[in-house]
Image (cartoon, rainbow, N blue to C red; front, side, top):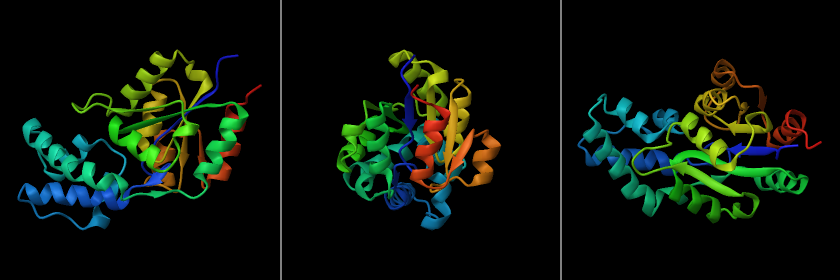
Length: 221
């Protein structure tokens, strides 16, 4: 039987990055001469690719302007923002159990791959994962569908033996486009309505519940 693989989103799924992301968005907007919204308004920006966020925040399709905003965001995020982050309770225990059960685990995030690796390492989660997949500096693989497709190709894994775990519609839609089942988590930034409308195969309200769903949807034997 093909290897059972579980892909995990990072922001809102493994960690809560609210402070680091919103402060870095505000920093970028201020540097561009804009009055930044309050942090709470920016909650919707946790999860989608940066390019899409700034397209909305700046109300522009100007690629050069968006690229400049992304550059400024990363200027602050690389120094301090990526560590203004909180590990979700119960995640290390979940990952340890899944790893002990024989599942292959990987991170699949729209976040820049180098940042994602630093964050996973910072929280001591790297031993649980085979690898960390993320986007490139030029924006390639920021779209979750493209990223999941790349992972399936590189790892030579079967979509039917793979699950994508995430808290936003982008995780579920990206999974569906690759014939992968998507499980939504309710402790992140997408609510039940968003995840259900995106086509989530199931929803979990706690890491413990998520573990049971994974074992049910993707049994090892």
